[in-house]
Amino acid sequence: MGMTQSSHTPVAEVIASAPVVVFAASWCPFCKSAKDALKEAGIEFKDVEVTDAQKAELKAWTGKTSVPQVFVKGQFIGGCNDGGLGGTVPLLKSGKLQEMLK
Image (tube, rainbow, N blue to C red; front, side, top):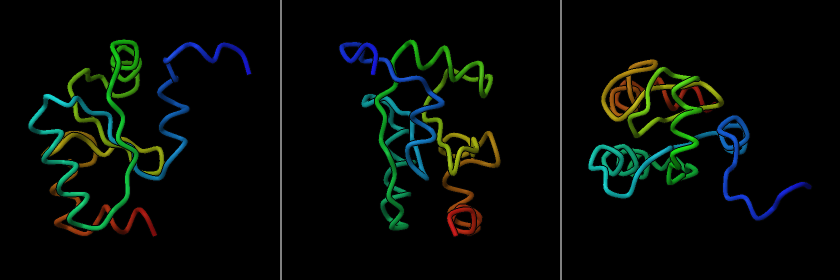
């Protein structure tokens, strides 16, 4: 299937590969908070250490290069506390994220 050496996976492919995808950076405290909130809620997610190439692609999708960028069923729901549909933590608190996964 083409070039397997390339570590770059297109963002669209990554987002399609799991119901919940978190593009994050290991050094980022907001990324950790978003992931911890998902874990606490018992929601499994694909944790993606974002590459520069993916950041550029994400900018085209969401207008943002900042992380975390969280997608649920292909929809950008925001970062940790805001953006997108409202952000991971607020959407978990309101139950909206859980609804999206039903």
